[in-house]
Length: 438
Image 1: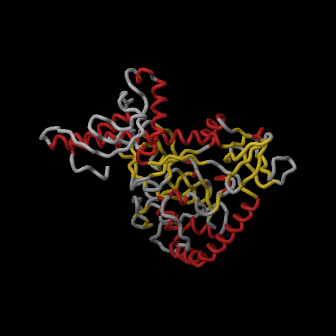
Image 2 (image 1 turned 120 degrees about the vertical axis):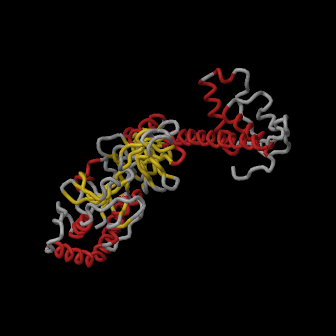
C-alpha cells in the first residue's frame, strides 16, 4: 500500500483484519448490520467491490458448507481508518517484518480475487451476446421483419451485443452495425456463454515493462523469452496464477498479475462502413505508394550494384506476384538475412527484434508503423483470404511476433537471438493476421 500509517502496530491490526475479512468468513461480531468492529476501535472497509466479494464468498461457502461452521459468512459493509492502537511490545523490527508479510499476503489475495471477479464479470457479459450460428451469414435488417432493408451481415460465429428482443428478432449492435437479426439463426443468454468461449480468441496483453516468459509456470523456471509492454499474446491456457502463451521462442508461461485478459470476436460490417473502409485504404495505399517509389528505385540500384560485386553474397529475391512496391519491401528485408536479433532494438544491421525489423524495413519506404507487434498486427488493411491470398510485402502477424511475406509460402523475420534474421515457412506458427500496406 502507498499510504502507510506512521505506527506499525495500527498497520498490523488493519492488515490482519483485512486479510481475514477477504479470505475467511467472519465471526458473528462483524456483520453488515454492525459496521464498526468493536475490539480496537477500527473502522474497516473493503472498498467498492464489497458486494462482489460477498457474493463470491457466499458461493464458495455454498459449494463447501464446512467453511461456514461456527462463522457468519457475510462480509462487512464498513470503512477503513485506524482509530486505536495495540501494544505488540518493543520488537519494532519484528513488527515491521510481520507488517511487510501481511502487506504481501493482502496484495496477493486481492489480486487473485480481482482476477476471478473480472473473469466472472466477463462470462456474465457473454449472456448479452448474440452469436450467429449459420452456414454463411445472417442479414442484419433495419426493422424486425423480412421486409426490412439489409444494413449489414453477421457472418457465422460473428458476435453482436443484444439490445432488445421482439417477436423472434434480436436487436443488436455489432461493430458499427445496429439492426435486427432473426433469432432462429443466433444464440444468446446462457447458451452464448459456452459458444463465446469457442468462437472468441483469447489474448493476454502485457501490462508491465518487459515481462519474462518462462518455460514452466514458476518463477524458478528458465526464461524462454521477453515481451514488451502492450504486446498481445495468444492465450493457450489459463491456470490459477499463470497463463500459457505463445511467443516466437515457443509456448511458455507468464504470471497472471502482469497481463490483462480479454476475448476478441469477429463483428459485423455495414455496407457503408465497408465502402468507406475500402476507399480509405485505397487512398492510404496510393499515398504510401507515392512515398515509396523513390526508395524502391534506390533499392533496385543497390541490388544491381550488389549483384555486380564479386564480394557480395548471392542475392535472394521475393517471388509470388503482388504489387511492385510489395515486392520491393520484401526484397529490401531480404538484404539483411543473417543479421542479429536483439530484443528492444531496431537496427537492421547491428540488431533488431521482430517488430523493429518490420518497422525499419517499411520506414525505408516512407511508411511509419507502430513499434510493437500487437499494433502492427492491425496496421494497413486486412487481406481477405488470409495466407492463401498473401502477397510479397504483406505483414504476417503471430502471437507476439511479426514478419514480412516474401512469396512461395515464406516470410523473412527477425526470429530469435539464436537465429537472427531468417526465412521461415509462413505457417510455422498459427497466423493471426495478414495485413497489406501497399
